[in-house]
Amino acid sequence: MSANGQASFVDVRNVSKRFGDLEVLKHVSLDVAEHNVVCLIGASGSGKSTLLRCINLLEQVDEGSIVVDGQEVTDGSIDVNALRRKIGIVFQAYNLFPHMTVLDNVTLAPRKVRRARQREARDTALELLQRIGLADKADEFPDRLSGGQQQRVAIVRALAMEPKLMLLDEITSALDPQLVSEVLSLVRELAETGMTMVIATHEMSFAKEVADKVCFLDAGVICEEGHPAQIFSEPREPRTREFLARVIEAGRM
Amino acid sequence: MHQVITTFLSPHDFRVALPNVWAGFQVNLKLMVVAEALVLVLALAIAVIRGLPGRGARPLRALMIVYTDFFRGTPLILVAFVVGFGMPALNIGLVNNRSNFTYGVIALTLVYTAYVTEVYRAGIESVHPSQRMAARSLGLNYAQSMRYVVIPQAVRRVIPPLLNDFIGLQKDTALVSVIGVAEAALQSQGYSQTYANFTSYTVAAVFFVLLTIPLARFTDHLILVRERRERATAV
View 1 (cartoon, each protein chain N blue to C red):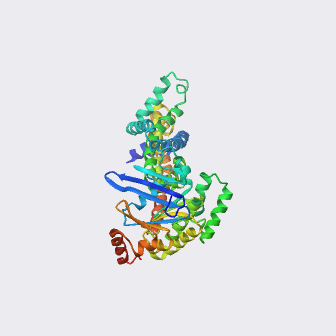
View 2 (view 1 turned 180 degrees about the horizontal axis):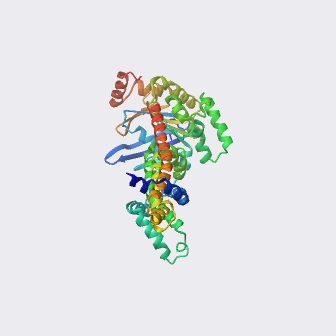
View 3 (view 1 turned 90 degrees about the horizontal axis):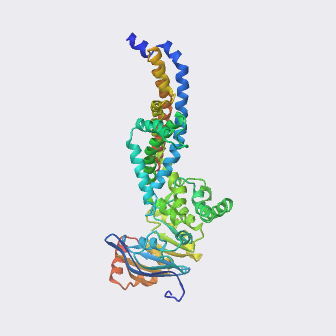
């Protein structure tokens, strides 16, 4: 159960993950209630991305368990592809398929994984692209789009599978500052529709505004978690305070 | 000088040798097309098998490594001898009674598949892991992400080196003359032995060069187009 009494949609229990000698996650536990937005903040290398990747099994955990939508994903016998169908993930580097048009990028998974009909997949994709104002780019290749446009297409590509959970891995970190807001406003809209999301981000003011809960990761440990108002205005842990002070100093809040 | 011209460049002999050498060259063309088609398909299959993940696929991967190591290291002429003279000696219905043309195709395919496998493999490895990760995270399984995401990108990237190997194959079709395939080199040899004049070889050389030049220029063109494209997208 999560703090506010709702059954948790994502339940990370005591997860550890090592890459060789490096312990990236140390006994991390995290609850995400349905329709909630959880933001992971912390320095680069603190384990935010790894935690996201463990949730959709792009990485295997070494210890602990993760339950998503009542299904234990860390159970070795799970159908990985079925699990990933309900979890969308968006990466820092967009990772669009450069040899396919924008439309094909969006329809590939619905057609091949969900076996949607060509026509139906196309209509859905165009509708989604319309919503983000990129319907006229449907037949372009990704390299003709700006970074912000590419990232929005990547979000829509994940949404086309109608996921129940979205994982966003520092999706604005590779963008020019003036392109950040168009991506964030799309994420904001998603949050308003009630999408459950776990977001690793360096955008503190965005986290403050959109998150139901903020977790501060430091060296593979969730050092402090709580309501954004509390974390950002009266952090309890000295390390959180130190981190936020540095963020403010860098002018990122 | 005069002697050089009459021996290698005699217009008379050129005309007389032309029909036979041309007939032979058509065999080269057929060898090339059939072998290349087989090579492109088999080499891709082997490259994919060599990249299969997991312990279960280990014996398969090992087998493919042995195959490519062996045939990349063995001179085509040896393979041609073994296939062309050895296979007929086998008492196996499927392989002992084929035409020399078929043995020629088998020898060329065995050797060039080994080369081209490496080309494909380099292409597959050049596709950034994040592409595979993106495909898998959308729910595509291993085979689907290879089929729709990795291989199409890999093949596009290796088209120029593939064409280079194709040029090599074109020329090497002449080597299977050693097992009696009546292709251009063998026809030229027949003429030169009958008339004590080597112009027939020149005729064959002209055919090969005429075929190779357009392919070489086309390869250059593709490389140039790609360089331009990459420069345009580099930010």
